[in-house]
Image 1: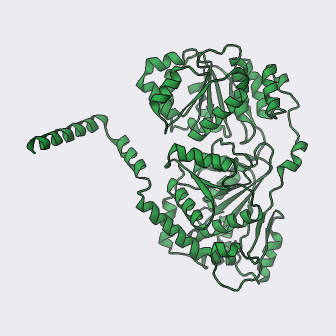
Image 2: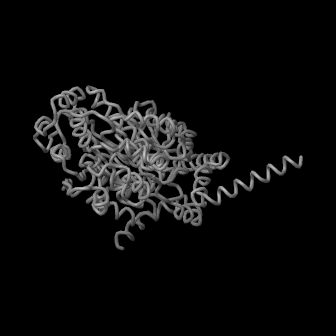
Image 3: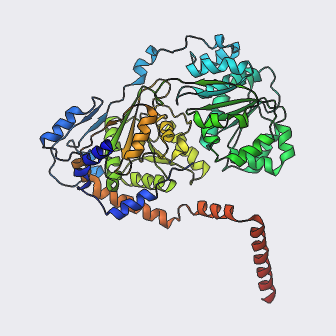
Length: 543
């Protein structure tokens, strides 16, 4: 209570600067949901100078003179007298050769075949990470495995390499099924299998929503070696033809649950039950996740033999090379703080990549429209856009055509996006585990990265929960609210225009319709359709 009071007291000066009505804030706070996601104002004061001196060396604020005139974001971008917020993330390329791997083993010593080791050398993968060094031998020995390690530590290769190693001995039929909670992660895993299995002519298929179901059924009938799927769509295929699909998976050797804690949290219970009923009981089951508690509780549901358990024993749930900070700001003007921080970081590092997480699909799309209206080139990634648009945004961000990607937590799980320099959380996640997965998109594979979380007066307790899970206190990033107020009017107006545009487009209507359909009894739906057909027929006869 003391620290909560202290942090709220620190916000008092900012809250009085440009706070909107408290009713509006309360409404926004109540509507906050996680989907399948400083203010010491006077620049001339002695107190602000002291705050700047206390700031971390990696975050430098400069306070140039200002004539008090409110300027647009584009205007201030072109002027030299703009406050600069430098988030100094070290260049990983300069120190990559000096990284020390904790396990002094080679891939060949783990028991992998020569062709696998040669393929890894071609892909510049030199030494195994701890999760790979510990799990691969047990998988090759035929054990079920539950592996828990931080994000960005190579969990995908920990199960892909032994599967391919064994597949090369007997490459017949569907050899492995990999289940994952998101479509984008499914495509990513399939890409990694293709790259690793190029020498043996590996065949893969991806079974996810948003794609032609008939074409997917044809691909399954061709018996690819590796099937990567989301639970919902694969369960649909099994339900439509249970005996036929069961025959396809009759000789399957491996079942992999990537992001196992998410898959086993109850959300996919019915789909997984349908899928498991069609699988061979002689399978080898592999579960991998960054967080382990939920997976352990449900392990007996999926594992058919005593599993080997590997858990990263370090006390911090995030990697050491990740610099984590938070920005304390009023809820009413949080978007203005967001724009200010992103603008300054992007100005100082034009080639950097920024990933912004939002809590809902609507907020994500509104932020994307807002940033576009302010002159930024951004992409969006959430479940309310088509699969083609989702993949397009992800590809453009990966190849550097856009430097800012705004997404929901659909991108927080497992996606390996190279060189994400900064992860920004527009809200504090209600689940601390979600925070771990979000910031895990940066500082991957030994690189450096940064993470900034925006904390409002409603989020103090949530921040404490995050700090408890990661095992460290997050440092506060002091943002000069006097500079932020220069952008408030334009940002709020642009955001409001974005909201109006979404209303005009009936954004989210498809989701509401599908939700209503799911609540209806199928027999009631059929009855209503028959009634409507009878009415139309009678009307035509009358005419």
